[in-house]
Each structure stands twice: as structure tokens, then as C-alpha cells.
Image (cartoon, rainbow, N blue to C red; front, side, top):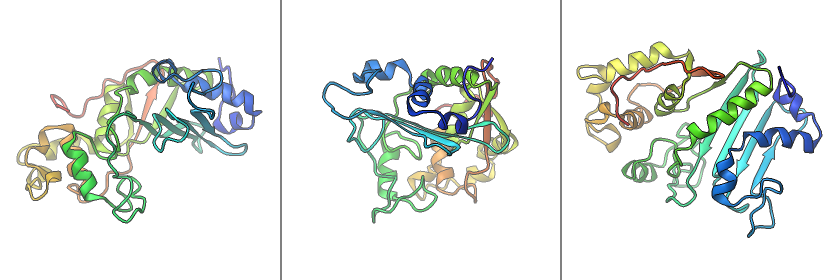
Length: 265
């Protein structure tokens, strides 16, 4: 039984206090504990401004959640962006979890300071190479906190309270899709493509042959790791962008999907 309105747009139409009380349930308890944020005021002892903010204007079908260690920090610890779809489902557009103490790699802007939009509008090759060497995956500006698994239960409870049985998410990169598989997601679009990608990365496959070693992004051993494959795909080894993939998660159900058996990260 739904406890709240069934759409983001309906929640956004509520008075500010009411909609923030609903969106607050998306924030995992470890956020407050680990970063000293007061769950009532959203402030820390050293900051006069809130560390947690929401962007959810009335009339909008989308919401954004920002959690920063300090209100002035450039990068959030946790960022979430979700919206209503046209067929009344919930779509998670982006989830980011950053370790604020980890080194930053400026892959989000090119060498002239222009946004790269996750590499779709441009690339900062030196920053990407540094990130790769540091063990990061495409799209990561900082090392993560390995906290996505701890965040899923809160989000499933949020979805159930809206009266929904499932939600959708778009993986922005190959490794994102594999992570979502491991946390119980299934494919609405792209399952056969993922199977084919795995096949073509095997020795003798087209993508395996394209791992020529001409750049670090196409290391000959990249086929044998999820991160390595993801960097090669980011570098264009598919011959086209990694787009069009949509996944979904049923509340309380693990889909048991695994498109890369016996893989290593």
C-alpha cells in the first residue's frame, strides 16, 4: 500500500517541509554517522550551511539530492538524480558516490575547462590516463566508497512507499551495468548486446583483436577484466558509444543475471 504520492511530480507539488521529509528517506544512515551530519538540520558542527540539499521544484518531474561533507565542496559524497518516465515508472538517471578524501581526477572537464559530459562531449586524456593508473573506471572523478549496495535497500523502501514494484536505471558505462547485475538488476534493453560484448572480448573475437596496445585504454589484457573492458569501450573499441541500455530492479527480487561469468574486476 502506497504511503506517499506515486510520482516525483506529485511529491514535488507538496509543501517544502513535506517533500523534504519524503526525500530524506533516500539518505542512508551511514552518511550521517560517517560525516557528522545532523539528520534534523542537515548541518555539521563546522558549517553554518546545510550539507544536504534537494533540487525538486514544484511542477518538475525530476529531483536531485546532493550530500556534501561541507556545503562548499565541489564534489558531493552522494548525488542522486531520478525522474518520472512517460509511462509512470521511476527512472534513476544518475547515482554517484565519491570518497571526498581520495585524489581527484579532472576527467569531467577537458584541458580547456569545458565539460566532457562523461566523455560524450569531449575527453581529458591525461586525466583519464591518471585515473586509469589509479585503478578508477571511466566516469569516476574520485574513488568511490563501495556504498551502492548499502544504498539499494533505502531506495527500494522509497520505491515501495510510492506504491511501485520496480524502478529503472540507465547504466552510463559497461562496468556500471555489471555492478547493477550483481545487485540484482535485469535488462529492459541491452541483454543480448551485453552477451555479444562478452563474446567478442574473448580471444578470437572482434573486440579482443582491437586491443592492440596502442594506448593504455586498449591494453591487450583488458579483455580479462571488467574495468579494462570498460576503458576500452570508453575509448571506442565497440565502434559506437555504449548507449541504449536500460535496466530495472524489482523490489526485494534479485534477477540472477550474469553476462560475464568468471570475470574479475
